[in-house]
Image (cartoon, rainbow, N blue to C red; front, side):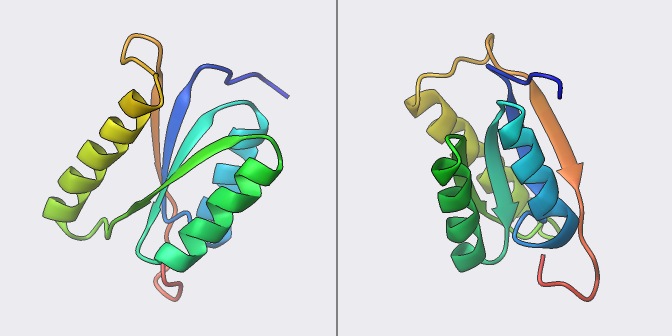
Length: 105
């Protein structure tokens, strides 16, 4: 497995399916993972699972179909990352959209 230590990943559609699996894999590789989706309950459970495995995760509620929510979600995520002590110079930003029309994203 490759290392993503000191990197930050943003995974949209992370509440289930491919997005969830991607978030877990990135966390396992050492990334601090911001998980985004519409379901706060599922995001909270995912962040707890990431933390339980020794990783660092944060939930950002957003619907990627709504540009204002995406903008607000990125701003909230950046604030949380800065509050946790991760400067922009130290972080690598990755984005992945993994949604299925039949899933709640």
